[in-house]
Image (cartoon, rainbow, N blue to C red; front, side):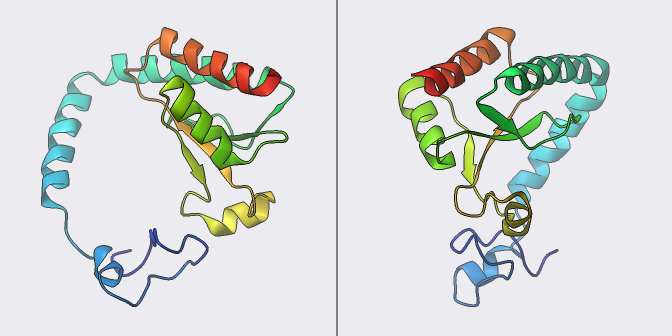
Amino acid sequence: PVMFGGTGTDSHSVYQPEDPPEAFECGTINLPAIAGLYAALKYKNSNKIMLEKNLKNNFDYLYTALTENPMVKVFSHKNECGIVSFIINGFDAQTIADVLNEKYDIAVRAGLCCAPLINKHLGTLKSGVVRASLSAFNTVAEIKTFLSAIDNITYN
């Protein structure tokens, strides 16, 4: 919706802040992003089969490996978006994200991810989740590096 969402500064709230500048951010049209989206859609439509196959293969590999780790709790179902949310037992989501970033140069999203109600439902309102997002351009080597980092965090 153009009148609320993505609060950013108050992730626990489902309502848009009333104070500027946050009060105006959700309704501001991002014209450069619209132009970029148009170019991306043209590229995707020209390479659809290859891109979908790569993303599916990458995601299947990552998802299977994460679900096989007994210390990892995966909240996502298999999907075509390449997004998986998880936690490592005994670790706060932000701690996992910080270690991945600082030690392995891997960027993930951690916390409530602008979805406080689903985190309440999942029982992760205090710890949050780690969200990894793949693309069709990720390589198997990158996924192996990510999984190795998760193993190192899990078992060390």
